Length: 394
Ligand SMILES: Cc1ncc(COP(=O)(O)O)c(C=O)c1O
Image 1 (cartoon, rainbow, N blue to C red):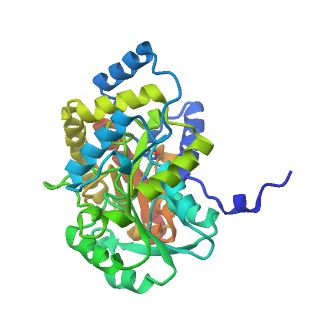
Image 2: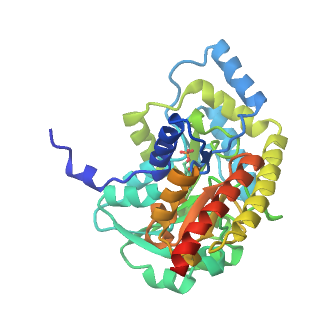
Image 3: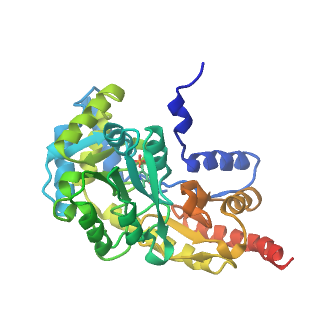
């Protein structure tokens, strides 16, 4: 049986493929330090797990409203209104199984062949996958290391066209850890405000940042709330990747469209996990503070270590839990270098090119692993560096 033509245009997420390869190497009895997958290594906080257990005992095991339980939609609206300083209510909220469906469903609802989508490159691979899958036209904008991995704003302005239907922003960013500065967001808002387009603002890492002020959201600028979809969720903030629960905040007409796609695909997000979601948002937040403090220690250690590896240069990221090392000085391409680190030195990491063409020349290390393991990884990478140093000499 032949698959539909559109399936030839859908992409994948390399982190999952590399994880499988790393596990196969471990199965041969070799040690691997896992710095490929993007998920907090901490357990889900106990009070959230308890809330889910209680919900199961109470019988939250049936279908619920497709757009999400009213109490959770209200809790999300309160949280998003307060954290971003914007007037949103439960009618703006769509609860879905993970953050990813807020890429899939709104793009499915909005895009037609020929529509142009501006998106960050290197960037989360699902953006480009979905753009191509839907027959829309990808318009990648390179992230500039010297600008803290933000856009070249002149280029952004030049790439906007009458066919631009969607602009995707991601801050804090995967894979670079970059945070879009407030002033850049203001320029972007000024450029798109009067255009007939939507903005998808992927804020899944909004709580994992290392500056004083939380990263700004484009929704806070005048006129932007009506044309923005915020993507956020529980996966990263509360170490709940396996629970599959996320949400989008958007104008009600788009909530309706997403709800139709949800009823055709999932019916609803699991009911007992939604009770746990309420506990996550309304319970104590010191678990998040502690996790971010630990990520900061690890960030400082891995960046310092990577900067001592010959041929590597690693900017200190402002958010998320990724170090995006520039490897131009090694004389190697990203994929062969990442493959060598995994296969010969037991350090599982991702080639920057997995995140798009402008990721070439970089390797992503997720520092969602213990400090000891990070130091071990740096030690192994330092040992590997004799290989590229020798190749440079000969
Ligand atoms: C930038 C970005 N957006 C969205 C997601 C999806 O999150 P979830 O696991 O909740 O679907 C991820 C996960 O890695 C991500 O890095």
